[in-house]
Image (cartoon, rainbow, N blue to C red; front, top):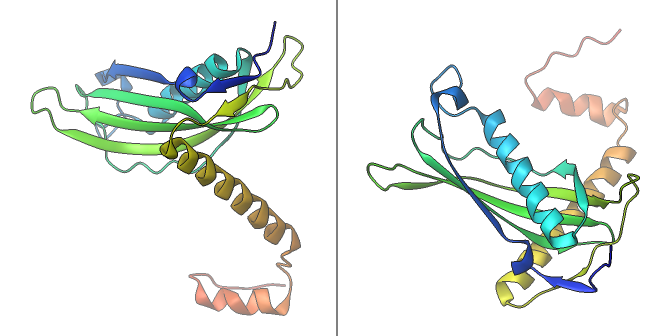
Length: 183
């Protein structure tokens, strides 16, 4: 396989539209969040693989907030593109909308970011092409990812240095809905 030196965001864009069926619903009659996550994982894989020309695996999923429920009979459209690349990793931005076929009403259901890693046939990480940014919107999305990545690193550092047994940490628990009965 010959690796391209660079690729555009447009080269990664994927759109998937699917009719939501009763078999996709949960006990409350709404489309099951797990089913939507499955579709999101599929489109993240497709966008990352299309961009990199490699098999890709999901490394992490950033916050998935379900903003609006999806109803049976609605069309769900997922749009994905690579917003950031590292050496072997890519951050794929995904936007999910639903459309009521009868009324034409469109709802933003969620947005999320999946970190995908390119692999070779042996399962080893492979380098991905540089990302060509061709619009200010693509630059904004790239920097959004940089900020998210840096925030995650700082949070992990704080988490690793936090002493949950310290007097200060135990005293802070009075601000939460817990009873502390340490023995």
